[in-house]
Length: 245
Image (cartoon, rainbow, N blue to C red; front, side, top):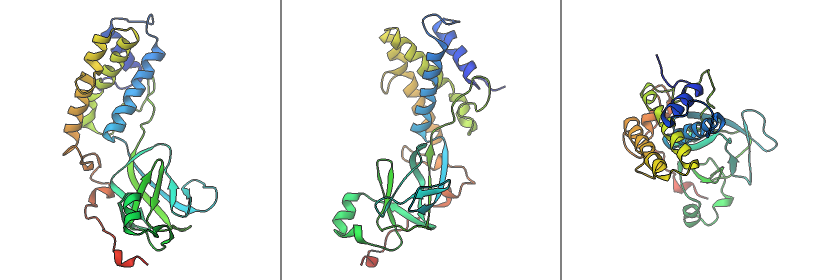
């Protein structure tokens, strides 16, 4: 039997631990909001939700499965996308490597005018850009992490249900919500026990979870299923600067 498998069970666990079995000082709405915040924080910090976004480039308003070209070389990623992971970015099935705009400028002052197949990408806010002008009809494939599905009162999805190793960490959501309960009640000592930066039990639990799921602090492959094609991509394809016109 899986415990803490929905929002109702999580709220009950929070109330048991703050010794308030029904709404009085803390409303269920407030507790649910803190649980949702914790769910998003953990999912974002550990990249728990794998996403694969594929889009065809267009010049006009995009439809489903399309992305509009902006300023000849950029596209806007979907709002639910958090970060690119080690699966990487592909342009017409060619792997692109990350680069900064500053480096592109330093290597080639006229880089904005270059055409051809991109081999490098950069991130600028919620935009992804390339070292070459991009063309309508071409395709972009991006592996990354996204926001989790919202929790529900008595139905799926259960928090962290995508990986059996994460089920035991559902109590982290409860720890976060309890800490926020004490914060609004001005009990800052109790709040610090749960949520003091780096040393609160919520943050310590997050580090334990990270250590179990990831091979190292910077290695995201531990979160990519074996069946995901992103996992097989290790060898980076560095650009051939002789192609610069």
